Figure: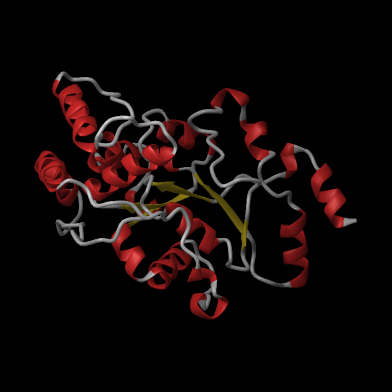
Length: 270
């Protein structure tokens, strides 16, 4: 009976999310989000990557609300005296898409945000391999990054498929911080998450105001999502990319107090 009632309720009785997992693509976001949904006080939306604030903005807020659970589970929780439920979604393009922060501020002015930032060089190569697996990329890695480096040199802001652009984290964070206070953001290196997911998940649960959860006992972190084997990259291409990112990495480090070098250069690929 409750399930039928829950499905029939209109958008106005479907609370908007309290948090967003922003990305980055190929940074462990899917694993982080899937693990987080194992927490008993986190409710899942209909899909992981809703893409409302980038691809479906014109559909309107009611369209977005329909992707989330109704008030029924929250009311039942309150009546039972158990901790409240929160919900959120994860769409990796939200971090880098230029129009998204201002749109989010209109709809979710009180939201909190979680982001995993992966070494932009290993992230770029993983992104490239993702496109190769899906037969979207015929070029060699060296040719692909050369084309994007040349595009950026010409002042092109939206070079596709953005192997480099997705790793310009300083630009992305500054856009978000122009709309929201910095204390609304929890940012961790992907390499830290790959090495010890439970520790990062503990940070996330505290940040979201959730009760402590025994991630190891739950078995939640036993599966890695979207991880695929692939051959190592050409060392010369990686060196060129590392040099290209050097000033951007320095800008990112300077955004934090004290300045922080984020990247474990031996972080394992996802």
